[in-house]
Length: 142
Image (cartoon, rainbow, N blue to C red; front, side, top):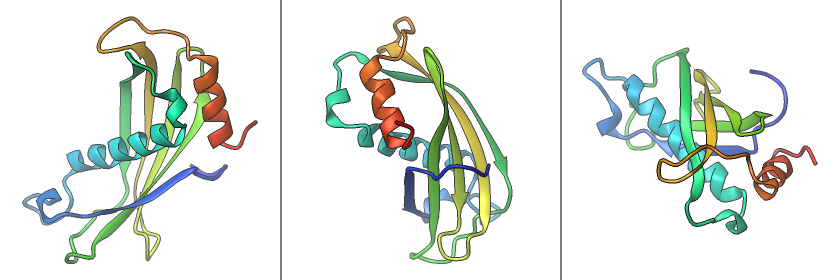
């Protein structure tokens, strides 16, 4: 997943509770890391996007695991990077990288598809112009 920069890059702690019986971060925890990055991305779009009853639903997520994340004590961290390579009419994609912030080891690459919707489970809707513009601005594609 090379190409443009990632507008969201954040370090997250690896918690002891994230580990499985093999003493590495369980694969399901990666989805939590991605979810936290999506929340940060959405928040960076701006407070003007806090619209009552509107948001997105997660339609698809896929994750390719490249290396195990091992717990190395209380200072263990992963870096999650997130960008939006595609913005459609009602949906958009995110690309993620989960890395070691100090050594640069790639732990996982992931993609997800989000669909704009009237919440909590209403119909899908076209992405409003102000949301589209905010994403384009954050991505540096104005």
